[in-house]
Length: 337
Image (cartoon, rainbow, N blue to C red; front, side, top):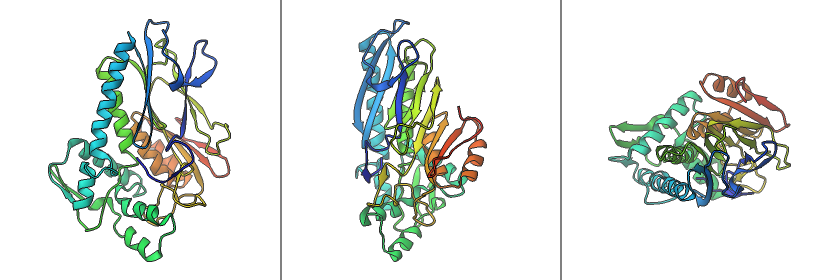
């Protein structure tokens, strides 16, 4: 859910790969055609353009019709949530909050995402800040080259602690504040799609929201894990890692995909204190129980020093990370698979 200049499909940070018959080769998971697995399950895949990116789902179900029905209902849930959380649609609850500075009777989904954003703000020492929207809007409008005075005025509006909640009512304490949920909403929406699949009895699936990935089970329903290659930020096919997962999520954040200026130094990753974008950390991949957790933490770590990033990740149960620096160095937390 980001705007900017794109070198490929937006936020396509992970190359999705699944184990084919034989188990040795890697192939794009979402390009595997429906086929009968050894377990008697049928693989069904579908892709749609949502949130400015390609969202794909792969499920194993007893029949193709059941797989299509489950995927259809999961996509319906995603569309419902986009209608609440997108800042690019003037009819959403988030847009209403941004326009009026307050919102009564806020949807539970918006409150849940804001609550997680507040937790990340605290955990990251303020690096993750949902109210950075005025700076993002300024960078988009000026193509990454804002006037110094305008930048300072926008930065003065950034402070997640100034979002007040009373029951289901929300308000900003300062006129001109606005929020962007770009760093976590897509993950939350992908998680809810995965939960819908699970609720419908699908035990084996992959949800891929433009590289923010949630998996369960195995790609052929036979116990073997999903295999996912982490995207090379230099686009040379030198994947920093290939991981195996049977459950959970992985997401990658990096400034090499979405940028505002021709030099690609001003990206969607913005330090909420300075307005600058990180140059040393090229990409951050995070494994976590949910996509929202993985996506939000990856964004936060991108704005930290490697030492801070590894320390924070190690303090969070069930989380691990891989950092790729501008020099090509790869730094992993202890639990990185």
